[in-house]
Image 1: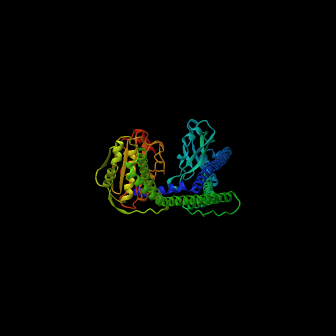
Image 2: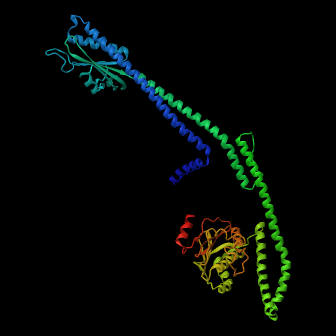
Image 3: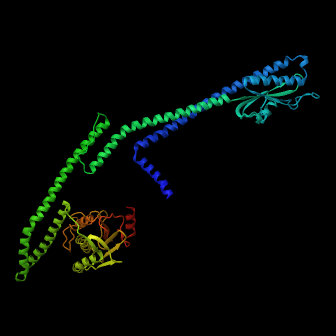
Length: 540
């Protein structure tokens, strides 16, 4: 349950992303702008950092050289009383520390360097540094260079302080040089540690400025993009809503036109298209209404002369035994065609009722298995004449709330159509039911249907082979009426077929009138169909 709740917001977000071009444009612009701002900001920050570091290194090196030169001058100017090595070393360290405190850097005096003191010299070994400085901040690599042959060297390092000072380590530049103490002739290493606190603060300030400026720039770009896309998307959305209303039948809907820009011209063209469609649809509706009225009127008007002709035909048919063979055959043909004409007239009247929306259902609970047996029994004579065996297969009763007359007409049309095309093979009527639906399928193994004909068999007067004779005397309207009857029940009537593999027609109805259909208990493609047909049906 938690997984479903967490997935729903993601699905809504993805749906919103797919449906809103404005959101996609804004987000894409923001992502690209963020990438550009990030790259430009990184380059600027890198250049500023390099400039600050280079300036600090140059200044620290210059100051280190000046301090070393000053120390050498003071040592060279020392009097004879100052030639005591301990005193001279203490004075040198004190002067360096005081100057470092005044100028903002720390000093460490290390020595004498190994091997630099003359034999027997009472040199005072050790390290003297600024108060609180952690002398381990001086990198070993720099010590090795300065205490070796290098006159001076420098490197980056973190300058640390003793714990009692409470100061945190900071990045800095450590510069080292060597000098000779006149009192004992020993070489000492002097290290100057220049903290880069100001440079770090400046770099942090630049980072905050770039970050703040970048965020503000992205917000401004997003707002501008939103406003610009809104000016374009809003008319498109209005056009979509108007198109939806037009599709719903409100043909008088039009877009509001303001201005003379491309969008206004688009709205004008859209309105002209809508007016043209409205006019054509009205013409088609009028033509369809006239056609339906014509079919209805002709069907009704033909009933009176048909009744007269039927009475005369019946008289001739009953007296046919008294006629010569040619006249007798003519009377029989007249009777057959009159029967077919009556069926055609009844079908035309039924079609006109569907077209006029006047068809109504008389619902009752019906067992479709009994109805199927009744239809098969009625069609038995036609099936025997064609050499076709018709069987009904069902696992039990199939009760549904339907109009028995209309469903029986559907099944009769399907069975007679299957007999016409079975080519002497068996026709099976299968019934099945589940919780909410019932289904009836009529399967034959005759000529079948070519690709694309399954959707055309329900068209009025359509025939796969116009030269093929109808043994059942069909009018060409049976399947069209069956489809309308199925739709009137809220059901499905579908067809499947393959050349040489027969066909199957499936009727699916809700068990209770008005309930929606979600599935059918009988597959449209029968299990005995070819593998190629099953694969194509699954892929479609």
